[in-house]
Length: 302
Ligand SMILES: O=C(O)CCC(=O)C(=O)O
Ligand SMILES: [Fe+2]
Image (cartoon, rainbow, N blue to C red):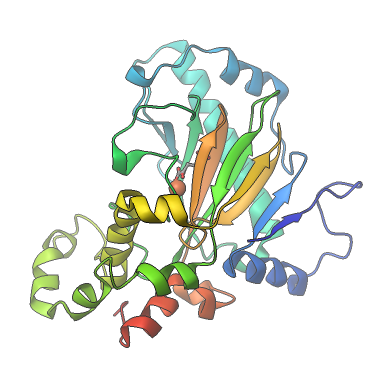
């Protein structure tokens, strides 16, 4: 795992910006690198940041995080309808718009081709958080969302550490190819790949009725793999680990479906997720669906 530092004295933007260069960034990300900005690469008003840090946040009042859906302009995870909630809503709306604009320029080959997913605000200290096993952030895992199958597309996330004093600390482990080579069959890849069309049809009933997008065997496997990795004490204990410290106000971009990660400590982070469809990938040979198809010996996304 390698982290690229974009701490350019003149600002975040590459001097000779071009589509070829942006494509290079897409390829680096897709191959499992994390792109890192020491300073904010988009506008985030100091007053908004101070407001977020000044509120009282407790586990019981939150639905894991505060979430915001840019495509519907809906805020979730905070009860009530107070002035505070309205302010929070407008901060999330602005933050999300800023990140979308920044990423549309920085990763121009994806712009307009992605599916906008949720943004989140993470106001609770990650160290010592008492969450059920499958929801724990401090166990290494790859991301997969039960309600948003990607059908082979990828999960791209932009994080910003809003904490003015403390880093956000992550652990990562080796490349997806190594992880999948070692654990995919044990996690049940063969069975999922061989599932009959009929049982998949039944599983996708809801999708056919228009309730949600249809899951492919790839999506089913990735959900299983997320849980499997968190449940696997041997993997958690013995996998090679790198410790990454993202300093105050740093921003990092990462495909979290390919880079196994765990958040060990840190409080106050913002995050925006983008789903990059298969057709928009710059280096599909590095994508988890292709790596898993090579292991399974058959298509997992049709
Ligand atoms: O909040 C973080 O830093 C990452 C937590 C995580 O793994 C996730 O939200 O999928
Ligand atoms: Fe995650």
